Amino acid sequence: NLPGAPSTNNLNYVVASLADNYIFRANLFNQIRLGYDRISSRTTPHSPFTFSGIGVNSSAQNDNKPSVTIAGSDNFNAGFYSPNTQNLFTLEDNLAWVHGRHSLRFGGGVTRTYLVNSGEEYYGQVNFPSWPDFLLGMNGAQNGTAGIPGFPPDGFSNVLYSFELLGVLAGHARTWEISAYGQDDWRVNSKLTLNLGLRWEWLPPFTNLSGRATNINPA
Image (cartoon, helix red, strand yellow):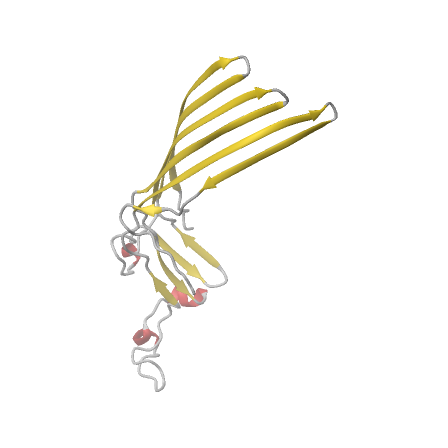
C-alpha cells in the first residue's frame, strides 16, 4: 500500500484596532478608527517518496513534490509548498450630525493591502495512459517502438506526458482601497422618511514590487 501525502499548515492571525469617539455636542459625533490585520500561512507537503528515489529525473525544486497520474483512474499528488502573508492597514473616519429633520452621516476610509508570497514551489507531474504503462514504465528502446518506420526515432515510452513548473514564483503585491460616502435620512413628515446616500470607491489593480505583475489584453 502506498502511504498518503500529508501537508502541514501553519496559520497565524493578528488583529488590532484603535478607535476614538468624540462628541462635539449633543447632535454631532465623530469616530475615527485605525486597524491592522495580518494573516500568515505556510503549507508544506510531505511526500513518502521523491522522484529521484523512483528513478525519475527531476529538478531539485520539484524532486520532493511528485505527482503521478494514471489517466482515468488514480492520482498521487504531494501538493505544493505555499508561504503567504497578508497585511491590511486601515484608517476610517465617520461623522454623524443630526440637524432638524435630517440625520446626516459622512465618512471615508483608506486600506493599504500588502500580499507577500515568499516563493511557492509547485509539483512536477508524470502521467501514464494506463495501469499497464505505469507498471512497465519503459522507454521506446525498451518497449520495442524505437526504430519502427513512421514512429519518432526514439519511439514512444510508456509515459503519456510529464511537465515541471519552475521559475521565481515569489511576489509582493500591493494595492489601495479608498472610499467615501454621504448619507441623509430625511424625515419629510411623520409618515415619510427618505433614505438618501452616495458612495464612491476606488479599487485600483494590484502592483508588484518586483515588477512581475502581468496583464493580457486579447484586443
